[in-house]
Image (cartoon, rainbow, N blue to C red; front, side):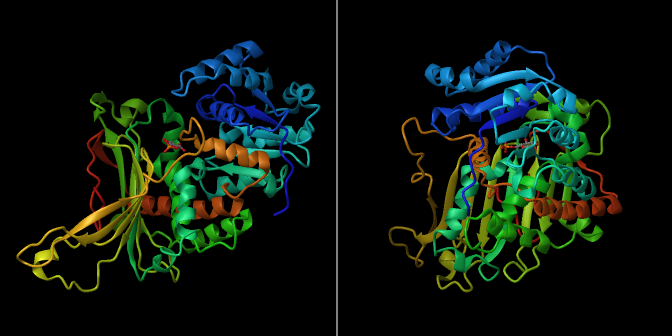
Length: 481
Ligand code: BG6
């Protein structure tokens, strides 16, 4: 892969918003703390709010102070020198003219759009007109790219008329998570798993993203999207791709993303019959979450809503490796616990030689990859229970956990924010962990099929009490506890 020159500045649109404050600014600060930001790299924050530079810096400083890591004042002194704030209306070239004097020395700025996707096209158009979008500049977009295939195509076409695909970085922050990248290492840096990674040995795969938080103030966005479009279209299908893809030739962005697209193209279209037999839509009603009373979704929303806050469904990948291996995906808000997990359930041994004594003890192997709240990889193996027993050999399952072996190198080692890795990759122009246009569109194609099947089957979300949803068993396989 040819070396791409480093970005020399970042322009952050929507700088006063939640994403910027919680994720982007702290990530940039930590990158600076670890010496990863290029020398002279400037960060120009912008939003409509008429703030002075000092007021904006105070806000960022407060946010950093409130984090568990606290602020290293020496790092802050260096970091804050990079920061500037300019208020502007980013949707017109005239508005963006405010930024031009601050970017005169920058040849390769990266533009991060932490704004509503409905503004992407207008901002890109204005970047072109104002001359800020140069042949070497980059654009970073957050999900959701559209609400369906049609709208995602429109956005992609409009952004693509200003930036070449190689310079468009579509973020799915799950790909910045350490354990997701470790899945690539686990699969392709070991010979142990790959020969077993197929329908001969694997019974099924479960991917769970359970959250205890409700939708709360985010309902104006969420009500239009629901769990299917907010989580499944992007984060969960990306996890599915990493589990299911063929070994790429190398870690080049093209190689990895080509393999992911093949998986998405192999997803079996969802039908109306599948909607009823292989999917669940739910919506939380009032209940108790974290020991406190929690309002129902419709109360937060302020009116009746047909939007799902929980979805579970079975996906099938029609190719040689995965034929007959269901992938069960489930995600929801206001569930009893927070857990993000991928579980690879292997088949039982074909025949037990251990007789009746051990019959009930014999459990099929399972590989569990925990992403949140803990990071771990656990392999469930059978072994002999120590000691002697009258009725023959007793077995026990032994979970082999890699968490003890996982270390974060260096002093003050800590778990990084997913955005740190991703921002660093944009600076270096490496798009392996970003989502290509055809990936987004293939994912939407399949998700549109699910939404259509639900509509045809007239499937309204079933109510579940906040904090008290027993994740339902479906098909002959059971969800893990
Ligand atoms: C976002 C969704 O993309 O991911 C949110 O819009 C969700 O609804 C969040 O809560 C989950 O991210 P994480 O990293 O906390 O699992």
